[in-house]
Amino acid sequence: MTFANVATLGVLPGRRDELVAHLTRPSEELAAAGCLLYEVGVSDDDPDTVFVVELWTSAAAHQASLQLPAVRAAIAEARPLLSGVVGGHRFDVVGSPLRATT
Amino acid sequence: MTFANVATLGVLPGRRDELVAHLTRPSEELAAAGCLLYEVGVSDDDPDTVFVVELWTSAAAHQASLQLPAVRAAIAEARPLLSGVVGGHRFDVVGSPLRATT
Image (cartoon, rainbow over all chains, first blue to last red; front, side):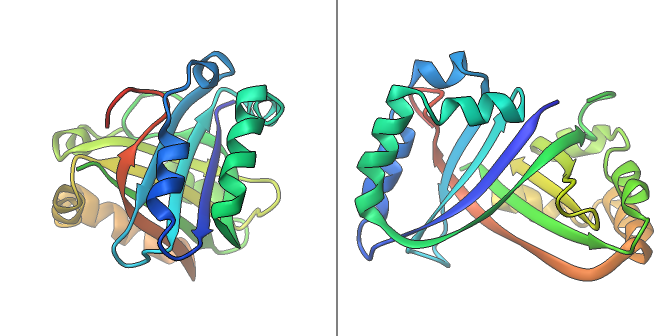
């Protein structure tokens, strides 16, 4: 079942674009690990936050990805940029109006 | 610029699956209006919430979609199922590690 992870990552003032650069660095490992979609965004209304939406082939694939060396390295690089304010939610995808079945 | 809308919709107890059915009803109008992705989900951890992640060709396309007759009808049908607890955020997509450019 497709799994979604949505996160808001608070960043230290002025460091947002650095975090975006880390998160958007091309990675072949993510797709190989079952990542279907990984969109990174920003909002003028909230300049110290980076937004992430991820879709994975399963919750297990997402969980396993956190142990990939490239992902662990990316997390370690990103951590000094974070303010500690994090949010988000996780859910199982059950359908879409854009397709006939899930 | 791709625009993302992420929402959490609180539902009245026991009405979650009805809301899911409304939100996942196949719609050709959404794609025609610029909707690139529209995933609906649930979580065992939060049984009275429906999660939605949408990607649109632009913020303007998303805004305009709210005036489509089919979307207005769907909102009217869904409203009696909602608890009034809503959340979410909107952002501009600036990249993805799954592709070389946005």
